[in-house]
Length: 155
Image (cartoon, rainbow, N blue to C red; front, side, top):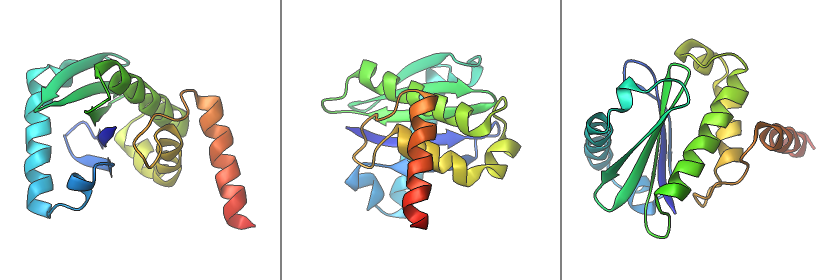
């Protein structure tokens, strides 16, 4: 199961954070801040900041695998452990990167991500389910899922 998905701006600020692990989601603010600093340190050790668009880096955070992938100027971190090996976490990271690119429709930047924040969250929710599993792996399925979700909400 995936533990978390974090989308960061070029300066390192968190734009979107999805916590799938009950321990992280229900922990205190100090615990999450400490976890984020450990995540940043693990990603920095793997060279995540120097990634080019579409490249991935893999690191370890305790028993969890951390996959960092760059989408435009944004950096996405997907953390997973347990039955999820590095390959499954990397697949979820690729799906999240596709979601970010599809939501932004242009090369993703911090400004575009903030402008299209609601759409970005919708697409990320389509890419990775609430249970922390990779759902939609291509932009077409994500787009179709978000259109159905908005149609359901209106009715």
